[in-house]
Image (tube, rainbow, N blue to C red; front, side, top):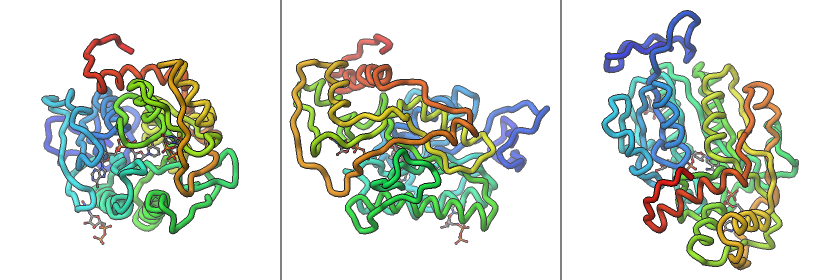
Length: 338
Ligand code: NAD
Ligand code: UDP
Ligand code: UDP
């Protein structure tokens, strides 16, 4: 796809998202739904830096203007306050669809995953844009296979407290494949595993943000259940690299994008203690219903087909997030570069 700069959006040829050899790429017009959120805002930074024009569509449910404010005034950046559950008319080359209430305390009773995804697929179909869905490792539910490969169909409770998210994303994947097969929309599916980093919501209940905020505030780290359940934690820059490779590549997926390093919640608490405060206390709390016992991505497919693998370990990535959290919690504006 080729974008004639200087036009308001009517000059793009439909070349299926690919830049033909010999044509120098001028920059694409890209929508990032949920672009004011944690992952989305880091993606927007990379796309803007690459020379693309970016339209962020966000209803600020969990996202924040502060995450993208540094692009205000850039003619290649636009921010639209919009709920993707409502139809949206735009002319673009690519759609990164991230809009979703992504944490357990936010995602209940929200139709974003189904209706929002349908609308963005409708948009992709109308304008011939390539569409990337950010699905989740939660489609594997409480997995009976370990580590999880993309061919595993999952073990999800359809009526559980988490099912609005799990089943919502599973439906979003179904819609995405139906638009691909039925309407010829070019699609990409990423299944994202737990990701952390700067700009993560401070109080949305995720384990990494909880532990880091608690350690900084000198509160005990709340470990749910016995703390032996595992997760693998991916640093946000690794994820963004994976998403961009997936969008630009030839393969539909789904692709697991996650860091295969596997930690129990007690081990995570220990890394947080080592990084922030060795004296931080641990407090055990009852676990939530249907909490998956184990989770770890098999990333062979992404390695082979996208040439991608994570580069930032938990011990390297955590301090980068701590710098950001410290500034946001204590309003400490010292620029120490992390
Ligand atoms: P986030 O909450 O920071 O970002 C989501 C963004 O979507 C927010 O800016 C929010 O305001 C916006 N949004 C929500 N509902 C909307 C709606 N109806 N219309 C418009 N905007 C809406 O979360 P994140 O961690 O950045 O997640 C981004 C995507 O990645 C989500 O689709 C999420 O499911 C997926 N994902 C994230 C993780 C992770 O660990 N961070 C793991 C798996 C999947
Ligand atoms: N849609 C949208 N923007 C567009 C095109 C479609 O938001 O540019 C929405 C549209 O309102 C509909 C959904 O996407 O709710 C699915 O569109 P599609 O054309 O696939 O289905 P139809 O309208 O034919 O049911
Ligand atoms: N968890 C925890 N303490 C917290 C928050 C979460 O021990 O303060 C646990 C939670 O029970 C789960 C794991 O950490 O087993 C990951 O939870 P999170 O909500 O971050 O991600 P998800 O369950 O979606 O993978």
